[in-house]
Length: 280
Image (cartoon, rainbow, N blue to C red; front, side, top):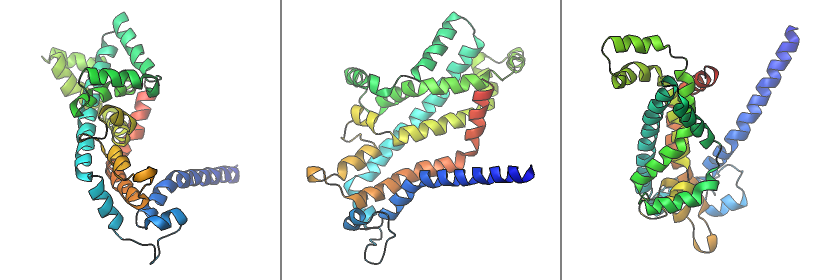
């Protein structure tokens, strides 16, 4: 029995190792090609750099200047930080209200949020783009509101599942002590929601930071363009030719912040997801 269990465990570890290699291979290939010249990337993209193919930081310098990396980075950071902050704060308050005030209205609102999770973005993107321009939302502040709408469904769903596990007696005791509903939420409920709040923040930050289609449709390729759009536009030459070396270097710089953010907060992801799913 023990030997059979060891064999099964070994097979599971081998499978997980293979999956890790498959998922990490694209990032590893990008790292390899970010320090190789453009010609050798096309000729041998899967080989290690040699003395002949190694370019050092030239690709990074070229990509940084041509893509106006600093400004695009600021735009992406501004949009991501304030979008995530708005999503976490407003959807947690919404979920708390939905769970604690149980009536037909809140039930309908909850199911509308859940339904929004299964609506593909491509289904509404043209209508959304039209109204974004009509309502003057085609700027950095406007797109934050748009991201709040698209991120609300999953976030409300996750917060609602966790809030159901919080005993109402805690909130009642705070009310008896003189706390208003706002104070009860921020002093009692929200600190308890910390694992789920961090999970929601991580998931939305990775999505918003890496998003290309929505910023391109709403903000275009002008001065408000985000990092994915800037990299795509600036490093494309005539007849669709691309400077692949500079492109790979910019991809490395673009994914570094979100990887660092994920590594600092990864311990909260499983805890938050499990709490929201199982207890919900």
